[in-house]
Structure formats: C-alpha cells, structure tokens
Length: 273
Image (spheres, rainbow, N blue to C red):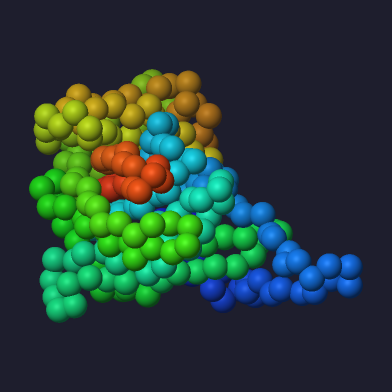
C-alpha cells in the first residue's frame, strides 16, 4: 500500500493524475467515427485496488455506482465511482457535506484517463487528506452526498448514517498470536443495529500481499474468529490486524442502482508465531 493511512484506491487515483496521459482521440483513415475505449469495471477496480485493510462486503453490488466514506485510524477520506452501461462514467460535480464551515461542502476531484487500454473515471478527496475531511464517524451523524449529474448519471442528493470505530478488547496491542489456533477478535461496543457489520483482516508486515480475512459478522455479535486454517497460511513475524466496522446501504437513484458504504477501520500491531 502506497500510503498506510489511506485506501489504496485514493493513492492510486492520485498517482494516475501524474503518471498517466489523458486519453486522446485520433482520426482513422477509414472512418471519422470516434474510438470508444472500453471502461474499467467497478468489480475489477475493487479487486485490483482496494487494500487488505478494508472490508469489502460480500454482497456489494458491483453493477451499480458506489460512494464511499472511510476513516482509517481517524484519518478520513472519500471516494466514489459511477456506473453506467457497465463502465465507470462521469456524474458531474460531486460534493460531500462537512460538519464545519464555511464552506459546508467538499467538492471531490474527478480523475479520468486510460490505463492498460481501459478508460476510468473516479472521484477522490486526496488533496484534502492532510487536514482530514470533517465528517462525523460517531455512529449518529449522516454523510450527505450531492451529485450534480451528467448525461449518464442523473443528479441526486442522498445520505447514509455513519459508523464509529470499534473499541477492541482483544487481542491486546502487540499481542503474540499463535498461528496454530483460532484468533478471536472482540469489541465492547457492539450496538444493536441490524445493518452494521464488522470484518477483520490480518496482514503480514514482511509481505503485505499476504493477508487473510475473517467472515464479517453483525457488530452486535461482539466478536469474530480468524480461523487457524487461514492464519497458518501467513508467515511468522510482525503483522497488522485491521478491524473494520461498516454500513452498506443500497438505493436506487433515478433508476440507477447505487451503494453507499461508510467504513471505519482501526489497526493494531500483532506478532504471529
């Protein structure tokens, strides 16, 4: 992961702004019709770019648009991608309501271009990360999106209720975790919401491409298990436990399926032995 405090998709988007040329249109000697470049799919973008520290809900609708607000150890960010005709498309200007103003809204940056022969359009909040996006992650406040719309995505305003950080009770910070037994991850503030879940992943520090994830459970369960069979696949040594609490809301915005994901991640250093 390029920056351990940010979702890899945001870091990727920032890098693309510098590293990739914008797509250019050329004329063919046989036709004047514009060249239509196929788009990166949302599912492919998620598989390639979302880091192991984030819980990607198993029931996420990758055929629809996705608007995400995240907090990683209290560093907040936002990103979104809009789907039309199976590809990523522009939705015009996109704003996220903040809690301090003026101004009371943050305009996300739109980035479009070509990578590996596929077009992409994504929105991200990278320029504002240094100071942090001022949106609540308290389990009570709402994250309000204002999408101005385009020729492919109609304008809409909608919101999703936030989640708060998990208060981990086990394992302890810097705990020594045996790979030969199940790892129980527990928290003290489960709540009663029927639409809030917790997932966990263990990532090797020596090789961050090696990681395992536990099946998500309702936050109200208070604990989950990373099974021995998965832990045994990781090398001994330093690792990171990432625990994510999230809410995923499905909506239909002017006929377009749209998902709103709000996720708060806390990380803890552990040692696998």
